Structures are given as C-alpha cells and as structure tokens.
Amino acid sequence: MDFLNALPGAVSQGLIWGIMAIGVYITFRILDIADLTVDGSLCTGAAVFAVMFTGGANLWLAMLAATLAGMAAGLVTGLLQTACGIPAILAGILTQLGLYSINMAIMGMKATVAINVTTNEMLDKLLVSLRFVTDVAKGARPFWRHPIFVGGLFTLAIIAVLYWFFGTELGCSLRATGANANMARAQGINTNFAKVLGLVVSNGLVALSGALLAQYNSASEINMGRGAIVIGLAAVIIGEVIFGKVFVNFALKLFAVVLGSIIYYIVLQAVLALGLNANYLKLLAALVVALFLSVPYWKDRYFSKSVKKGGARNA
Image 1 (cartoon, rainbow, N blue to C red):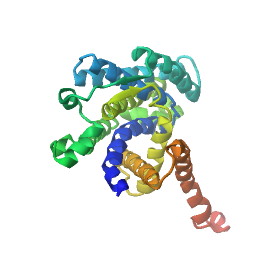
Image 2 (cartoon, one colour; image 1 turned 45 degrees about the horizontal axis):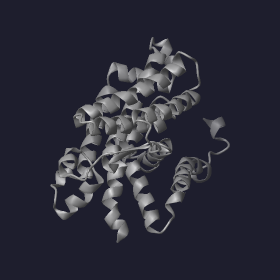
Image 3 (spheres, rainbow, N blue to C red; image 1 turned 30 degrees about the horizontal axis):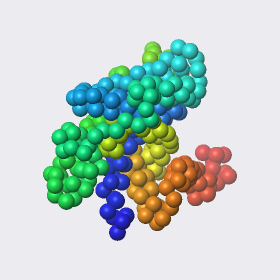
Image 4 (cartoon, rainbow, N blue to C red; image 1 turned 60 degrees about the horizontal axis):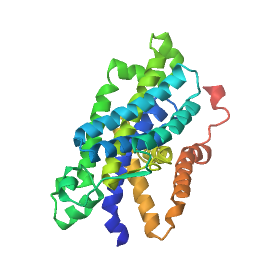
C-alpha cells in the first residue's frame, strides 16, 4: 500500500529527472561524448533558480536564468575540449569541480537554500511541488497542478522542440559529428562548433531539470547533483533496452529516455518499499546501470543464433 501511495511521487520525479536524462542522451548517444559536467550543472540550475526566486524574481525569469547558467557550464566544457585539447571526460570533470565552488558562491556560501512554501502565496507561484501531489489527491488543487501533468507538458514541449531542431541543417550537422567526425569534417561541417553546441544544449536541459527539481523539493542543495550522470545513463540505457526495437523515430527515442527515467524511479521506490536502507541507493543505481548495459552484450553473446562456419565462404 505504501508503494502505491508513493507511486505518483516516483512518476513525478521520473519526469523531472527525465529532462536531465534527455540532456545526457544528447551528449552520450548523439555526440558520443561522456560528459560529466551534469553533476555540477544540475545543481547550478537549482542554485540560480532558488536564489533568484527567493529574492523576488519572476518564476519564468528565474528558470530562464537557470537554463542559461547551465548552458554557460556546457560552453566551458566545450571550449576546454575544442580550444584547449583536453579530453572529453577530463574536461567534464574539471568543469564539474569548478562548479562546486561556483554553486556555493551562488548560494551565498550556504549548503542549502530553502524555498519558503509555508504560505500559499509562495507555494502557488511554483510550477511543481511535492505538496501538489497530496493536494491534488485530496482535491485541494485542480488536476492540472499535479507534477505529473506539468512535468508531462514540459517533457512533450522539449521533445517537440528537439525533434524540430535536430531535423534542421544545424541539428543534422550535430548528429553527423557524433556519427563520424572525420566524414563530417570532409563535408565541410565545423565539428568543434557542433560539439560545443551539443554540450551547451545538453547542460541547458540539465540545468532546467535542476530548476524544476528545486521547486519540487522546495530547496537547492549543494550535493543534489551528485550521481546525476548515473541516473541519466540509467534512464538512457533502460529506455533503449526496453523500447529500442519499438521506438525507432527520433522523437520516440527521446520519449523512451523519459520512460526509462520513470521506470528507474519506480524500481527505486519499489525497493525502498521492501525495506532497503536508503544509504544503499547509489549502489543499487550502479547495479541497475551495469545490468542494463550488460543485457545487449549477453543477448548477442549467449542468445543470438550462431552463424554457420561456411556462411562467409558461401556468401
């Protein structure tokens, strides 16, 4: 029963983190880059939003500023790779490391910036909140204020925009860079610019997710982005393994990533309902990612039909 009661909250978190997972998908699958900046840029988005919103700024302006801050983080990582020749993984680590101090500075050297939701006036201004889950269930708020509804609209809008963007000439050049950088350069594509652009878009989405997460949790916390890359990869891999053969359209592939994020959080909630100590969640996340990464290999290695030895000769 506790699991069923917690299910709407798990789906809500899955949708919010799913936006972050789409950002991870852009770098990991489209650009073929392992970008570790997301652990820092998620918190950057949350920190910028929380500080601006609690300071009296308009909610949409605070969310825009949070997204731009994440894009700036992606720009730094991209320039470290392209202008300085630093390997992708190390560039992400360096940016993530520097963002810790920057995020602390944004939050006034405090580990946590809380959003006061004790008054309905402040609470009503938020787009999503954990309190909305129970309020809608009790009938105190209309259904369209439920985080699942709002998160779903955000997700669909983002997927629609990305589907349009990656169908443009600029978006196709970005996809070509990730598929084969040498061939893309031969076609006259500026691959360095494409890499930087992809990282900017990716971390902008991650920071937007951080801003929504700060609203949902009513706070920005300095370590809230720790392990975000693992959650993002888990969502990407789960979505591909379960829906890869069904969702072949690009928009559906992005949607599969969000579904993977939702499944990930439902699994975590189910395990917690069984009595697992919450301190083991990071270990569980690592095991889930390792398991789903291994599934395609196991299928090819142990369950695919073996090719006859004479096949190559007779072909």
